[in-house]
Image (cartoon, rainbow, N blue to C red; front, side, top):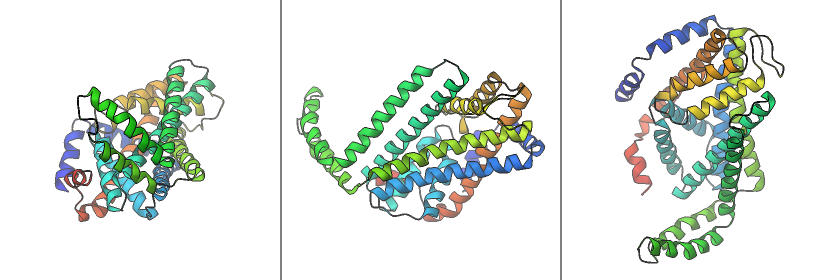
Length: 336
């Protein structure tokens, strides 16, 4: 525990001014707006947990809602506390799902499908925001992302329903690839087929798939609501579909959110500190807000969705997982 705390302090060194200034902004902001933002941020993670429960249930792995929520909060803390934290969060999720009884391929299937759904909705929200604002930048790249992620989602869904056809495809294609790689034709063919056959345990109905997609969308909408509430808390004006002087709209808030998520994909700092704030502030100013109010809104948003939620995640992690002795080494062993 002390080691982890020391690592958090090390990576946040030199950025303690972010915490102090952020706390000052939270104190000046409207309390109801901050409360709504915190509730929306927690609900966003709860929606993510529902996606996990549905996908695991399709693989006949039953989990309690509180356990899944604890895992999502803990994984989020790992993801936001260190550079490249997404990989650490994935290790924790993979290991925990294995302890719940999920097979390695079910864990991988969940990670791929949930990630594809999240990317589809994020890109779609970006397209909608751009269309509402009448902007033109990066529209086609976002449309292309939606198309690619929809295709990936369909392929994963198809694979789960057609493991025998996928196994036949592997037996046909993999030997040819092995020849190109100058390997024996049957190299790792049986192992790959054995892994694919484990998909027979996944029985996802169309209804479950659509429900998972809806919860995935709600995850983003609730996160956007968090930013919207922070803008309201700082400015005292609720963003609507029509812009007011020196304020933005719902579409502007959504575009700022999507932009920050794209920038934060390359997490070179804990939680994307620096680039994410710059992206949020710059976009909010571009869509109508003053620099001062945009800056304040971003601070409050990051204090709520980053600092508060991350601290809560670490509390949950220490009380839920450290007693079980979960470690990256164990996770590595479970994947082999």
